[in-house]
Image (tube, rainbow, N blue to C red):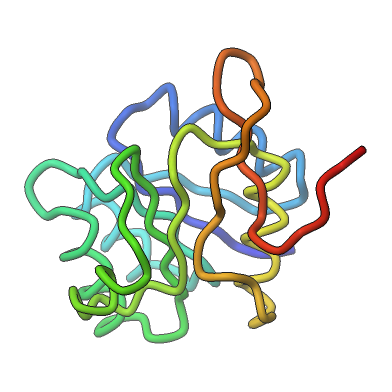
Amino acid sequence: MHRLLIVEEQADQARVMAIGLRLEGFEVETAASSADALERLAARPFELAVVDLMLPGTNGIQLARMIRESNPGTRVVLMSAYHLSERQLARADCGAAGFVPKPLDLGELAEFLRSKASGGAAPFELAAGSEPLVGARTRTVAGAASPR
């Protein structure tokens, strides 16, 4: 079971993600701020941290840098409604292992995160799809075959 920390200031989004990813087999904790995330990371190791880019105070890129320094074994995946390319994140030098655009499809997110946790050759980004899912766009893994 992969241990995952979700860092999301919006409690409803964090709760939905946590429930969905627990159903997918992840051990999940949530943090509402960068400070809370750093406390949780200091208390126990996590394989992955899914970090919202637009956190108040210390933003997601700054937090990713702090996690890289203090917890080098934790892979960071940034998420945001604002798109950032792999090139932009490389220039930010934050050590992010991936990027997930919002809104999220939890099943595809779980598959993407499993690949990141295992060190697999997953693409850097979970790419936008085109089919609706409960009022949101579905996300598909880049390079994955479309369901028929």
